[in-house]
Length: 317
Image (cartoon, rainbow, N blue to C red):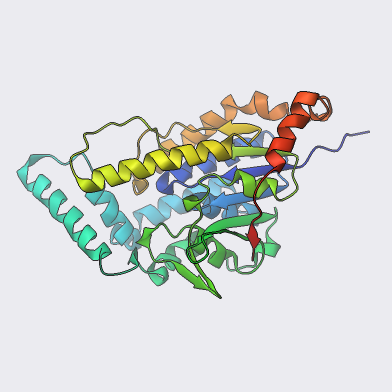
């Protein structure tokens, strides 16, 4: 008689372009036949997780990304302009001047509107990857995590439009206009949980596999301006908030994404390979979750589970 496996949830973290690594992780989990009972995503983790939960294979996701990044729509987009403004490889006087002007122009725009990219403009990218279905219709149960800027609480989408949920979860503060829904003003889920481990535990699973695509905390450049210090402070805060969430996961997969900026969409292929490698390195730890029985009932493990269950409530919409 085959033993029923414990329920396993997959928590996919946010990180903009670094989220491409999730595709590699999903490819390996699929190849190794690791059962997933629910997928919960934040930001780019919601984008990749929602598409996969619907039934789009990692191979097809990679092909779609390649086509999109080569498209005129992306090449002329504000997101690509943001990436170019962050490019540190500029050389020569003219290139440095262009870099300076791009940065200042983008910052000036940010002073006068809620996002550099409107919700409508960003929606076309979401539509490229996410089908027009309800969350309830995904092949694997799926949840997307967003933040309500009005109440300051975490919002977990469990029903309604899949596209709308992913859109809200991916609305990076400052870059993408917040999404209005009923009484909520929704922005990136990573504001509260870069990796949504707690939200995944709230789905009634026994184990959580978390994937963090957070960039390396090590500083690789000099802090010269106010904006540099502000961004650095935010990175440090996010790192320690993530550490709190990740401490509740049973397995943490960490693709090597270095210090890549969230707008750098030029390295999709290498990031996917990094996701594959990180998942394979964690496979022994993941497989240990499957038999489960001995680990479930040790006093040390039960104490760990009780600590994980002591968590704040989410708002479900």
